[in-house]
Length: 260
Ligand code: ADP
Ligand code: MG
Image 1 (cartoon, rainbow, N blue to C red):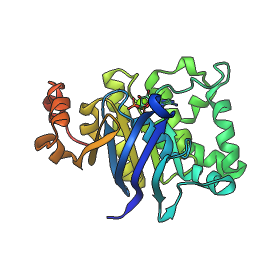
Image 2: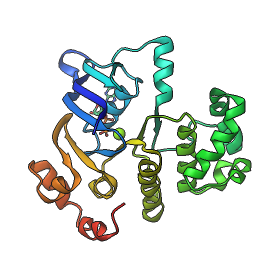
Image 3: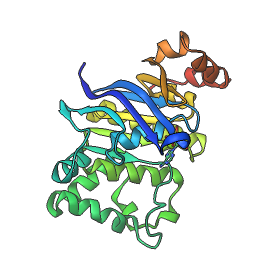
Image 4: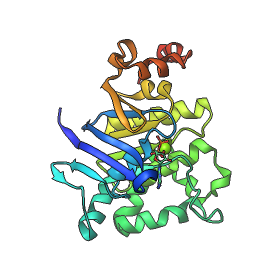
């Protein structure tokens, strides 16, 4: 297996002096190609800050980010724009930043233009197919879709760029349980069918374990445990991991579901 992403000694400090917050403390991990890796931890543990730095949306305080064999820690201009196509993200609240009076088609038009008009339409239809949707969704308004359908549209939008890495930060947190499982399955299908590398971020260790090949556990900005999912579930080493697992009485019944 090869690592698509190598993160070395990543730190992030917000503010200075006495009020400084060390949001991410010396975090190192790798994302294996065509695997789903999850980061799990309570709210405020630094998960989104890690995601934003990997996405190049926020400068690192220190550390190195290596993507596909290249140092991407301090990209600028054209290099950064090229990088942004290869690393796409979906967040918790799809469409929150979009005009609600636009149809889904209009909302996706910009992504289509980025790809190029000729291949754009074809890629769009392929991408919708990958998330189990048909092009008739393009004529609908966001409020006519369920939360799960909206999130699938956002994943399709990301897929149009044909990214090498998809980062989903609490992308299922607002969804009902049944819709949530549906999205988790979409993500594992992308791994299996397209060889997509996925970084799935959640505060819910049940979800993390449901879909991940590998689980990373963060507590107060530090990575306290990481390993293959079964190892983390059945032989957790860190007290914090044990506590997270104990807080999920339904985890074991959830694990009885067929694992993706
Ligand atoms: P998580 O995603 O795990 O809930 P975050 O990465 O959002 O955690 O936040 C980690 C810590 O960093 C929190 O204490 C949060 O308040 C702080 N933080 C996050 N973003 C900022 C920011 N832009 N400015 C100052 N502090 C921040
Ligand atoms: Mg977060």
